[in-house]
Amino acid sequence: MMMEWDSNSDPSGDEIDEEEDEELELGSGFLFSSGGGGNGSAPLPFPVDSLLQPAPCGFVVTDALEPDHPIIYVNSVFEIVTGYRADEVLGRNCRFLQCRGPFAKRRHPLVDSTVVAEIRRCLEKGIEFQGELLNFRKDGSPLMNRLRMTPIYGDDETITHIIGIQFFTETNLDLGPLPGSSAKESARSSDRFRSSLSSYGPILDCKQNSNRGLCGILQLSDEVLSMKILSRLTPRDIASIGSVCQRLYELTKNEDLWRMVCQNAWGSETTQVLETVPGAKRLGWGRLARELTTLEAAAWRKLTVKGAVEPSRCNFSACAVGNRVVLFGGEGVNMQPMNDTFVLDLNSSSPEWQHVKVSSPPPGRWGHTLSCVNGSHLVLFGGCGTQGLLNDVFVLDLDAKHPTWREISSLAPPLPRSWHSSCTLDGTKLIVSGGCADSGVLLSDTFLLDLSMEKPVWREIPVAWTPPSRLGHTLSVYGGRKILMFGGLAKSGPLRFRSSDVFTMDLSEEEPCWRCVTGSGMPGAGNPGGVAPPPRLDHVAVSLPGGRILVFGGSVAGLHSASQLYILDPTEEKPTWRILNVPGRPPRFAWGHSTCVVGGTRAIVLGGQTGEEWMLSDLHELSLASNIN
Image 1 (cartoon, helix red, strand yellow):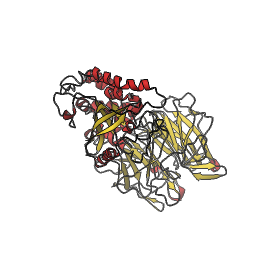
Image 2 (image 1 turned 90 degrees about the vertical axis):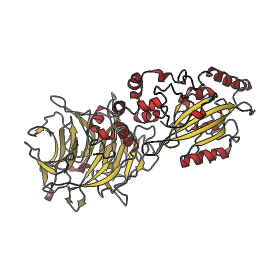
Image 3 (image 1 turned 90 degrees about the horizontal axis):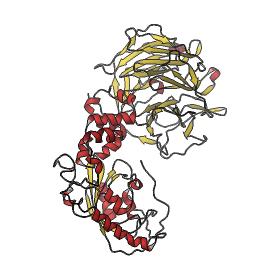
Image 4 (image 1 turned 180 degrees about the horizontal axis):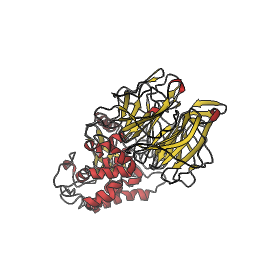
């Protein structure tokens, strides 16, 4: 988590320009011994023996994959020597130690700029740094920091963390007290410093137990440490903690721990889906968590499959059931509504479209939605048929011996509609939003149907305010019971425009309400940083583990590329759109109704469009994790 700590002024009056403040000045502490890690004399991933001396030793870990190298770990020596608590510095860049006092924004003029420049050079080149630099405690008193910084590499030779070890010593600089602090308090700081060091005297002997007093947590057994503490952390935190010491490094290589961490962070439903991904077991939970967090393995590729979907059609709906893609209905020649079902098994060594013989097929339709519930069940809602708009519900168990479409008789259904949006919640609930009703009227309502009930009843979610009416938008589930609405063709007075607005709703609240995250002139709308996706409709929205939403494709005006990927994390304090560039050749077109997410790691885009014919033997796959078969 990134935190903003700097103020706008330096009350000490000691300021210089901060044009060179991109450097990393590390400040925290940890001590290593051959016995405290629980693994004998196993080598550490970086040389520390030469640094272990009877002096105040600080240890810090920063995340090199995040912007500005935020601190992810500091130890007790750092807290005692500098006066800063861990919760005051986690998430910050370490350069604040070059500023005199907690409210200073600029580097103190006595800090050697040549050393600062050398730190920056070593960071840019990914090499080790050693040197001395003037630092300041929280109370403004100066101290010298003999610093050693070492980059840590991941499995793919990318620098993932920076380790910093510091040795603090007193310096004879009389700068006077900070404004607002007494001279007496400033004079006492050195006495506290020396007193702190003497209390750590026995621990600073590297031949003794370095964990005693500094890291009592490491005195817990491996089982308690893994099951009760590490399993409750996020995947990113586990990756960071593995860089702290040899024992934690070994613990964080455990696949069972990684699975628990992923399940706690992403939910059991997502974890179960990910277990079905081909090659997931060989990939490992640790690497899968990293790739789905960093998206470093994301890539496009084109696939060709056998079989055919005949007659040809457009405006059908596609949905994934496990690693199978299911296609239903669509608009045929002369606007003929279709009612047939096709399946493509991507687990097959030679995937081929197969027509599924089903009993009691629903009336033909297009502009409908198809969703997966309860593992292997498909739920169909709405659309436009021969007799006009529909609001019926059908369910199909794809794994049944004789698959049969079964109509669900539900009470108080919503208005008939097409080009609405839907999603599923808790594996049993269908949520429907918006769409187009009779005479082209756009809708703004939201309904919920619990399919686990013996006699399901539609329930409209009452809200005090609704986003503008729209069609062709997307609904995405994140954070368990939260939904995010994006885009669509929205009503604005008498006009209709493509939208890039984002709205969220938390259905776990007693009185759920729509909140505008980003939008043009919406109540409470934010003005996000980054580059927002151009307004669009009938696009693709992919929910990623951890809550982020990936958007691409759809109908976009002007010269904008519909294949550009955009990502948003609605859980951030200030959600910001970011562009995601991935290798490979993306499809020319990608529509929401003909794209589905398979196994939580692959977005399958069906076909390429030539006039009104869909060539469904050509697929494009956006893979978010390495493909290991």
